[in-house]
Image (cartoon, rainbow, N blue to C red; front, side, top):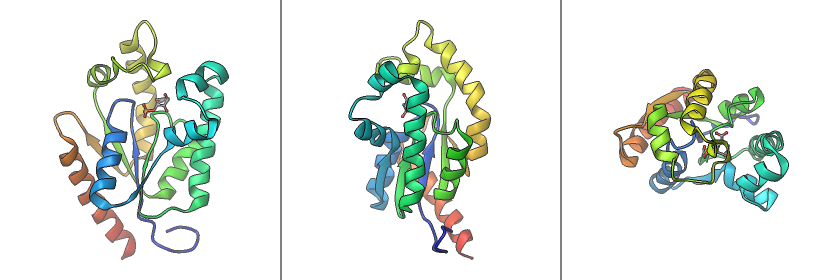
Length: 184
Ligand code: S3P
């Protein structure tokens, strides 16, 4: 329920970089006809520059402030029938985790460090992974973040070996059950 007592039916995707949040967000939008909000895209629109530039010129803390502001504003806007795809570090701040759970059904898309490495190695738009040893960074961050993803999520999906249709179908079935229980 939101502050006005109405049922909130949003799906929020969390998870590490490279786990397919944006792809699955688009698939859910297509299947459900929901609106789609991508917090990274929203940050870039507000800052009027790419995430790589925000990290380079303003630093990670400023990026996290922008990310927290986008997430806080989402609660303010009180969306419904919306899929919200978040950046991999959106769960780092406690207030973000609380808001994401208030916004709706939170789904953690999970993969192993090696799968994440293989899926991210050719992409240069993730400043955190532009290091000499991305494998080590992925393993370290994943270890630190795993309890936070777990704390925030209503549902966990291991994405390896599943295609977008299968992942979306799993989410829909579980979300449908969750929302029906909320109503009763
Ligand atoms: C980040 C993940 C990125 C983006 C930024 C920081 C992170 O989003 O928000 O580069 O800290 O994990 P994706 O998970 O969509 O790549």
